Length: 85
Image 1 (cartoon, rainbow, N blue to C red):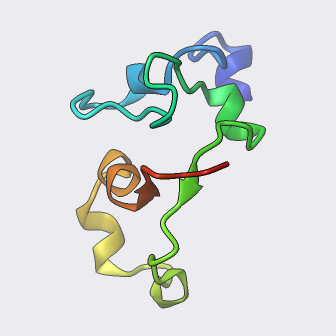
Image 2: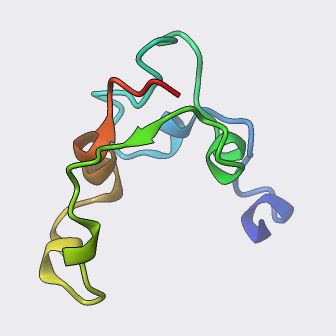
């Protein structure tokens, strides 16, 4: 929220604007023409679901695997494109 107060980011901008790579784009599979915003992500209202196969319990702070991939890569890998919510 400090970045919003300092006008460095906007809560209603498409999240793809802030990613280093926009190919592929992050979008809801049922509504590809609708944008997902930071506001939706922060309020948990973006209607995206995580991949249930992701072994969250095996990730520990300081794991080397966390530093080798970008946030965008993680999103593209672990967000479920067939989310029903």
